[in-house]
Image 1 (cartoon, protein in one colour):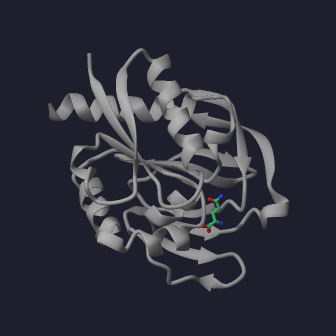
Image 2 (image 1 turned 90 degrees about the horizontal axis):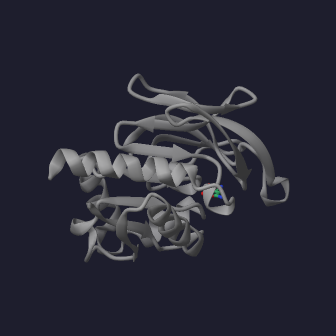
Length: 209
Ligand code: GLN
């Protein structure tokens, strides 16, 4: 049976919730694996997949400059490692970043996911909300989305598949080995997004081993 080493970027944000959601999903799928909190470059080479949790994208990016972590992750993702960016994680992965109110943010980012993202589109902390959403994984599935200072995806490039929309705003996409959502699956009990991400890891693992 395959053994997966899944990392959760542990600089700032929803770390513990993601670790336990991945653990729960690995168990549910009857796989074996470990989940590691990643806050330096030491164990990156051994990872089979990584989650960048929600939090504050500018803070995560700045603190990730230590050990040139972002650059090293960028190379690893370019080599095909599956990555799941949640909310701030989605923003960090994007190519083009604007803030709803201030426009282009010029923040550090990984420049990998060919989308234009609009930060804080769904409002401030007090405007957080939950909504039922439908998402293509690869069948259309209903789940709950929790939105906390979430971005929307304004435009997508050719290689980007739209997985979900809410009131005509794109909220989940996939581009090859990159999965990204503007909502927070770690805050619901439904592990479907993590199970889908683990299936991406499984496929990549089968192709490379
Ligand atoms: N608005 C935050 C940012 O721009 C993201 C919010 C979140 O991850 N919940 O980084």
